[in-house]
Image (tube, rainbow, N blue to C red):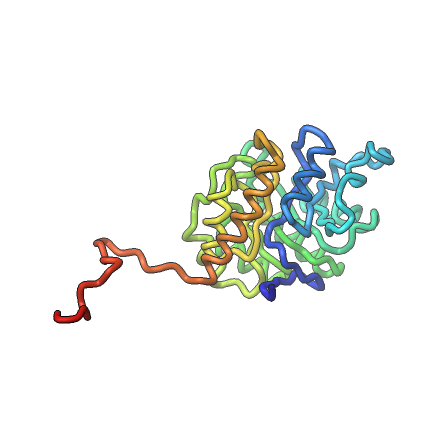
Length: 257
């Protein structure tokens, strides 16, 4: 019950953050968001239909208890990302922002130079910046030095479902960072989520793995449970890996031995 974590002024109990894209319809999205148990939902500011009202608006279908995390998806320059973050704040979404500056349309890998540039500006403007970045420990450190409130390295390319491709770099980032590290992008199924949490991630943000599953609601439940299980396994501490067998019932110490 006391296993909470913080971003800026916010304290959370759920370690699963979810998105709003790629669902077949808004009612399905709402059911999946509720089933996930998530407290934070990310919304792509540039993809919002600002003219839509009532049930035609995506925002109308997000459970009221969830905290909005506007993101700068589809921004390919630092200036675009900065303007988009400002727009999200003007729309009343608060000062949290998931910062994305994309460098390549095919892979959707981040533009590190643009990301750092945008992060420095937004931090100075009072935003609580959560940057989506690659799994490079040096970049992670520079983002932390720039004042970012969290680091969000990718597990694999956005929407790929490949799972955790480089656990060793992620471990280095997690062990070095003094701010929360969230795995963002690439998770495909529940076992991927559990692995990310067992590595020591504070939380996981995902969208495609839930939204494009055959049953998004059931997958949201599976991801919720996997994140919880992975966190418990991390806290419990796994046994060391060994090359040879170690008997579960040791022969030493027995009566008469």
